[in-house]
Image 1 (cartoon, rainbow, N blue to C red):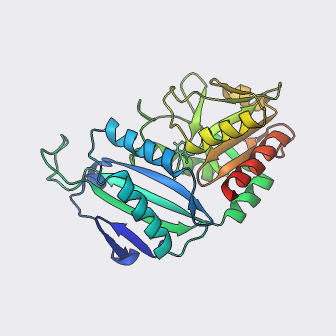
Image 2 (cartoon, rainbow, N blue to C red):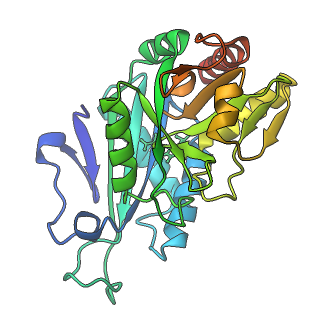
Image 3 (spheres, helix red, strand yellow):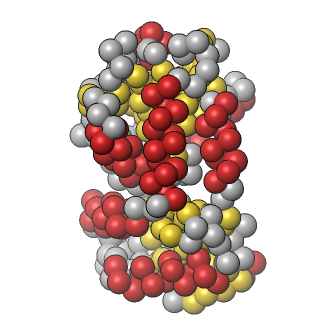
Length: 283
Ligand code: PDD
């Protein structure tokens, strides 16, 4: 757990960190967030995360709580105060406190909170060595999944259903049988030809920062990347499947709905990408 949190201008012990009951984040999930991995004290892909935070705020006509420079300083200070080497930074901006009314308030001050907890990157890597199971769940979300909104009920219900089915992640599937993304991750397959396939970010999914990084790494390794939607059947027939996210990095999926992907073990392509992603974080 984060020992010290940043809440609207102050660093406070997490036990004393509160926002108001009239905060629109609490009442309406009228907020946006980011999650950033910290490796050896360094924020991984900080600038793309801040770019996305600003895009999310803009999409919801939400004012920024501060400029980017001060925000970088707050995050750096939070890592220091929590004495975190490998960890996970969570940042959340909401429209702030106002009398309850669905329409935007005429005036409100955005609320900004951030926490930093330890993340065992060795355990994340160990999980990538064995791979994980996943199960398909219907994607019942809205039409703006590009916005990283705190409105996550469909995501948490899907994750919970996957966990109750004995899996680690939910693979979300649209009405036409196409995989959209995971409940908190992006999805990839390795085709029969050895190319990577992942859904285009224009197609109502979150533009994952890890997804973009893994795409760049794959291109450096001269592994072809095709940005095209794929179905559950394509995934089951694929050589390999894996997911990407800030907290999971790159993580092989070895069974989907209890059916083996490939031979049911992490494959060589995913292994290369996992190694290369950890090298990138360590650099
Ligand atoms: N989840 N898709 C969804 C729906 C997500 O919530 C996330 C991130 C991703 C991966 O994005 P990134 O690579 O930028 O972390 C894809 C974070 C980790 C979370 O909700 O905690």
